[in-house]
Length: 433
Image (cartoon, rainbow, N blue to C red; front, side, top):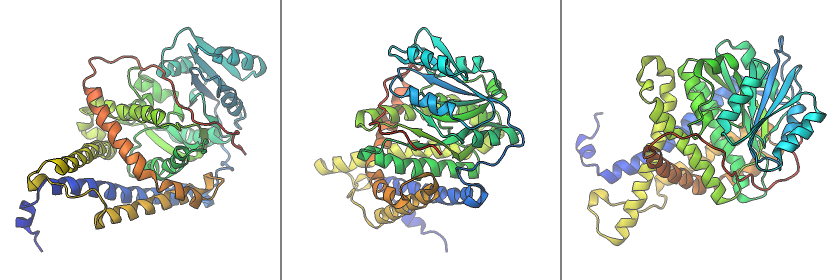
């Protein structure tokens, strides 16, 4: 049956806007669900190995664990202690103090006198995380680099899981691990536990299934030095150096793997201002790579990256479409609008109920996939993640809307410096078994 062309021609602009804001997240949710399940069946089933028992390596080349840090006195001792507990035949830990103004430097020197595997480098002034990583890479003795943040607590088996990919994949340039939220005492912390499973973890699984990965997790990633040399290491003028290096590696035809069994415990913001600053930086990073590398994506050689790039471009478009829908609805409350621009309601209709049910299915599937990495039952996290759309969709929309003009209007590139980070409410250290 042919489409009803007169009906299509009579569609209003508001119908197109509402259709896109509804169908885009619905379509992507099912793409992520199917892709994530396919990844699980191929790479992650317990029959293929659990998170506590990595397969033996027939060869285990030495690696360097890099820890760039700035004003991390509150977290750093735990971070170094967990890194030194890594169960891997030969490794070193290189900590780069990027001009900290607190007790980070003296603390590192004291730890280095106790632990022979730890080497410390001091920069006289704050240069930014990308520069600290480059300095650490230059000082590292080995050709495989595991990079973690100054507040991250590395699981003892994480390095082994990531090295398996780097050793056995000739074109593997990087491996991204699986950050787990440690601070869960507030509603924001509990919701983020679900977010990292239902959104971030599921998306990485799906992206790995259909082509490329948008970004490694800056808090835990392993790199081949050969791949980093090819692309020029980390750029210091990008808001998110991890997104930038991920795009450059993959556009140079290096593969990036996602290893969910490579666990790392992290602290996340538990205040709205801290969360806003973090997500705004993430949004800026996504806009920057689109602007800088968008022309290169037009090449046929970059075709495997088209899916991820289009997905990100569509998400930016969706944010602005949602903003227009909200603005038109609010305007319609105070001034009469033409019928083609009138948004009758923001309350869920049958379409909203369908989208809501799909979100719940997505959350249920993703939390089930991550159940082996959580000590608490996955249904307990399911209760908290249902609040995700109310908070984070709005936050995501606003940060993208703010980030795009801010990035476009920036007159020149400047070095990205460290900023104050909300580390949330601290609890006892996780059990690393």
